[in-house]
Length: 299
Image 1 (cartoon, rainbow, N blue to C red):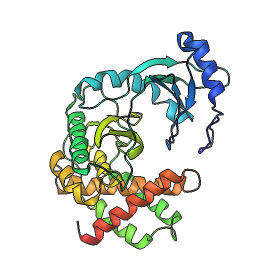
Image 2: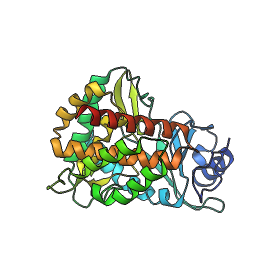
Image 3: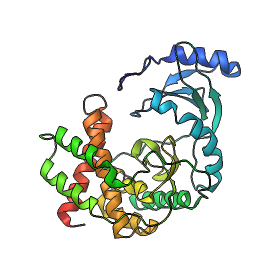
Image 4: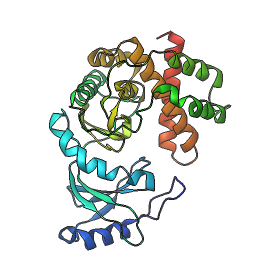
């Protein structure tokens, strides 16, 4: 089965391509089954390889730039983290018909958390905080800038453009007011730390209600730890956000920036994916509504 395209510049990706790549570059795995992974991910196509591995192929050139970073940094970060992260097993080379590097990773069991139907919300909030805190504490020496390493104010133009494009789809007046509130939050005075940068449901795996793994480290790097607070609105119900906030030790300014990051990211995702990725669009709508509910409560 081929992968449905969401971006300009995507190449054709299907199971036949994956089999050819594996046979040519990793012949020891050529006899294993290849099955498309049902995922709402937007940067990579994923095919399960046998029972214990997954092949990840960038959909576009921008995503391919993250491959080397993952292979370098994931093995260095993993020992410091409290849950499993992907283990690189093979780095594939571009070939005719597929122009970018690609990866084979160890398969990690678990399911993405279902927004609005979290089985153990308090435990998940604590697990997420434990991961964020551990990642923030890793030695930043030599680390690259995170994908979302810019100050929140640098997103103002793009965020307002998304609001304008979504007028009639969202409550533009209330969303603008929430965005203006976020922009008034003081910036972080300290140095950049390690952040995942994309703690959304599709990048988390849970098992029996607990966080079992964090995946897709293409955005990882050094930045403001408030960026990873987006998990509070992307994943957690409102009544346990305080548990997460207390566990990560976020002050008022960091919490306000985190809410602003969640709103900005969700607006851009809804604008971009509303016609091509219904799962991402639905999650983005949920985040926007949660931020507006916070705003209405004066949170």
